[in-house]
Image (cartoon, rainbow, N blue to C red):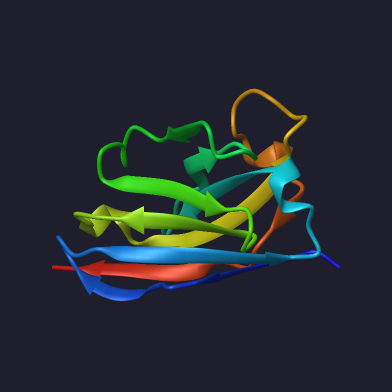
Length: 125
């Protein structure tokens, strides 16, 4: 049974940093691209960052470039999202997702095979 479990969320102030962790099990982890999405209140789920199975390539949404960093540890079967200089508009439920490394192209949510349940990040002023 495949499980993706997010942790590390919470309430922080604008300008603070936070690191999200997505721990996985039951997954041939290195053969999956890993992605972070987020869904803000009243908005659709949106791509945040993605990383290839080997970790050699990463992509970011324009809104988080230069502030967020995605990384992975294939030995620990975990993916991380380091979030710096957090802004009010980063408030959202953050989801971890996985798709086969054989799938290429945009990191669209429709191409994801597995999802975590999400974790709330709240940024206050």
